Amino acid sequence: MDDDLLKWRAEFPALQRCVHLISHSLGCVPRRAHEYVALFLHQWATESISAWEEWIPEVDRSARRLERILGAAEGTIAMRTNVSEVQAVVASCFDYTAERNKIVYTGLQFPTVSYVWKAEERRGAKVHIVPSQDGISVDVEALCAAIDERTVAVPVSHVLYSSAFVQDARRIAERAAEVGAHVVLDCYQSAGTIPLALDELGVSFACGGSVKYLCGGPGAAYLYVRPDLIAEFEPRVTGWFANRSPFAFTMPDQTYADSAWRYMGGTPAVAALYQARAGQEIIGEIGVAPIREKSLRQTGAIIDQVDERGMTLRSPRAAANRGGSVVFDFEGADEVARELNRRRFYCDHRPQAGIRVAPHFYTKDEEIDLFFREVDRLRG
Image (cartoon, rainbow, N blue to C red; front, side):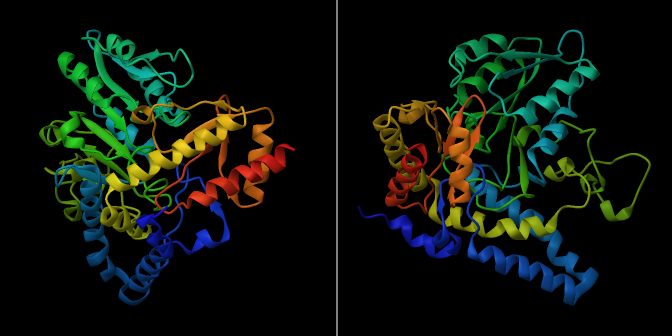
């Protein structure tokens, strides 16, 4: 069938050497990323310390590109390096009292998020985990019922990493607002493959990074803060770039920036921002809506392949509930996944879940067929 998005394959020469169905974990590297990293190195080599005159503005340029992709107001995003760090920054904004010390999240949360918030119990927090009944989804009403007047924060994933189930972020944010709690929405598995309008969802914070569907490699994570909350918090996890005048070198106390930069830390990882620029530009130019349309069609085709083989589907069937990946399982799936990767049919495997695959805007329909033929060969 006609697929206008395939014209973008020319921007990803690595696709000529593999079947890349792992964008939920690592997006394919854009050709332009090489050029932008080379530009960074050229600036370093030729301009020395003066290169900072280009590097510091790149922090805001990266944030502006992401704001357009994520449907966020200008000036609401601060750049960090990874989601673990971002979650720690947000956690450091809060104090815990006997009347309000509850942290609510689900049993299908990505582990790094749980590690950060569970550690907050050392400072007086009490973690409440809402279990999944089927290992695929979490009942939104059960989650909302756990959010009460004692709740401080609700760190949840927009799309669950282990199943691709899409959580109702708007409903969760509405419930949190009723009791004065703050939703921290992890968009890592949705940004770049599901259209977002963060300013309309009502969440207090959102985060994600460059590794997956944004095709930016590691190191360019982001923190969104709702406009009316930017000036409200003074994170304990901080650094000199969060200062109102970092190059004034004042001390001992922090004087926070008035902007989203107050959520910055130490010296930013500028090379990662240059590396991530290409993916941000391409996603921004395409627009996420057509990517979502293609994703739903191709993930539906993957589910058909799974059903034909009698494998166990561990992702939602309903398109509205499904993110950009499909998870399926069978006996020996972990070994098959390892061999698939050795043969450059890229996927991954997660315990208690199975093999995860994700097409993206650059995926050909025939590559899905090729992938499952290879699975058949390996299963015998």
